[in-house]
Image (cartoon, rainbow, N blue to C red; front, side, top):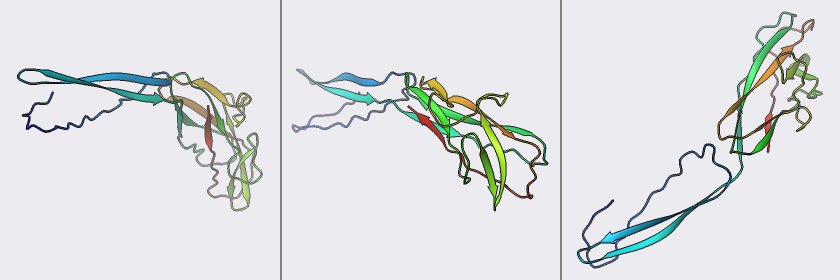
Length: 179
């Protein structure tokens, strides 16, 4: 509520609006009507205006790093977490690409140090039997958005028995949310 004294000319008031988080709200159009009034000594004047917004389907994705730690030739397992946030009701798939190491595929990934390769795998389950690839409906994970971030665990495995020169081996995986 604002108050003031008229001076015979038009008065202008700015109304500031903010849309809070739309957690769980379905996509679509939203409309409301606001009515304002001014009351003087002898009369009241009113005016109405519409407030509208469109909630479009959308998703956001983030991930933590996967660090196998020091490799001594034995099997090492590690995990990463992917967080997917989609608007309510949006069906999505989460995929992982082959990485940046030349010659890698989603089922045969490698980390690189100079010209040396260190093989590893990324899986959708802790038994390391479901490869995590990048083809929706085939080798990805799927979910339905509910307006909250959902964590997906990526299970990594560095096979034993690889004879490689010592040093830091790296690869970069791109996680994609398809919706």
